[in-house]
Image 1 (cartoon, one colour):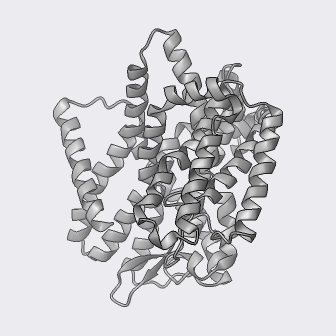
Image 2 (cartoon, helix red, strand yellow):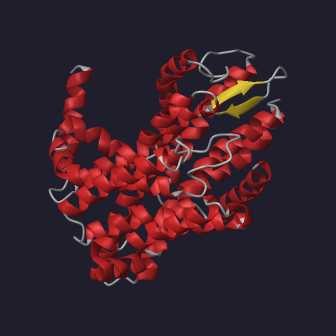
Image 3 (tube, rainbow, N blue to C red):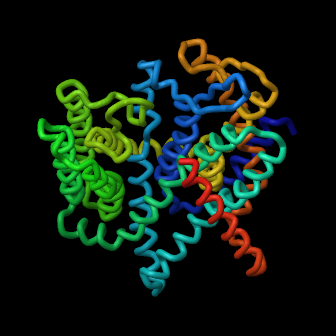
Length: 406
């Protein structure tokens, strides 16, 4: 049997084992939003090497302005949280039908999310001194630490949103499809205060108020969607209204074009989220709702469904380890004192972009190799209690080290 025949056979087998009640469209949206995370970090993050061989992070967004529109596509956190809110609402309902309490439901979801995070942190707690002993410069180790921690804070945000699921359900029942509107209004007010003519008199900490409503917006849309409170007309309103607001904020109010932070820029859209992030999330979420049926029909094809299943089964591994994969390749080139286009050269030209595209399959292969071992952190840990305590202690040590590095 040739490779194509084996692939078709595997796809058919996975398709046959998939329950008829499985929401394939939701899985497809989750996989799409998840894959945007490594692709975004791999394309919007670069390296440079100093004469003494230290690897540093450097963003192409600092010099390549045409990359900003790419961030509109690769920043899919709106869809990520939309699917999360939808899934949590359905999951909590099923748990309550089984007689489980909300606390037990949340504890199970928290453990499932935190296991792989503790795993990657524990491994890096061992890698930091090991890399130093192997002669890797401390600056390079710090670069790796920053890269690893960079996406992990979203797990904390996601846990906080998950804990708020019962509140989101109550808001959905009371306000229907408009339950996310107060969150949008709150972010708009904060943006008006921090960017208006009185901005100099506004305390800097005020922007942090946007953290909760900014990221809860997409999650609440997902909860309301699961409750059946957002129908096709509402989806069109989200898509078109979000696109219109996005355009106005860019062209009239001159929000930064990039959806991720640009080193040296005075303003950022993502930390904490600005109104532009919510406008993009609205447009993306509305489009996702409108395309749901088409996506579901397309994923009835076994060869399209197979990669979606693989990505969903490896979701936390991909999320936690994709930066380690990119760093491994860059650190190796740096250790060999190699100036490699698209890898350790300055990300300041179209040539760098083309070279970086060629490196993407390499990063993916390294991630796949890491995943063969790292996936065990996703499953329940069948370890004696002292080993679990040791892993937790190691993860805590890495967290302390990461705070110092950041």
